Amino acid sequence: MAYQRVLFEHGVLRQAREKLGLTQQQVADQANIHQRQYQRFESGERNLSSSSFNIACRVLDVLQLDIAKYAHGDYIFSEETMEIQLDNPTEDKKQ
Image (cartoon, rainbow, N blue to C red; front, side):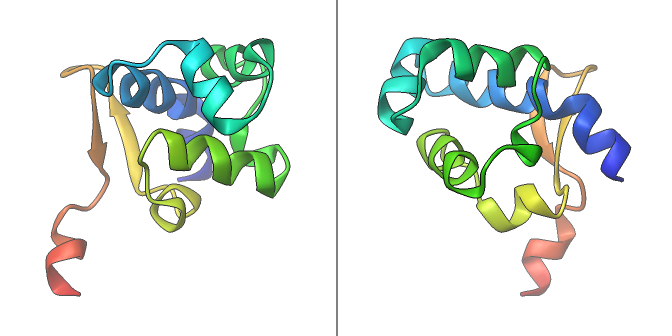
């Protein structure tokens, strides 16, 4: 699961940003980081999951992604639908 999370991490970030209608600059500004730093996360040049916890939390908050679900690899980027999906959507219904 970890390999898949790293592989699709940048797709999840991009899709979440586009879904919210935000530019990379807007995400960076709201997360209080440099645009280039965010671009590196979104391009896959750097992994958000290996960045500092504080930065990761701020970016995920701006993109309205649940931090715990992201950390557990529950979000996946579907290349078929080009959308973010929960890896196990029935899990939410159990809780």
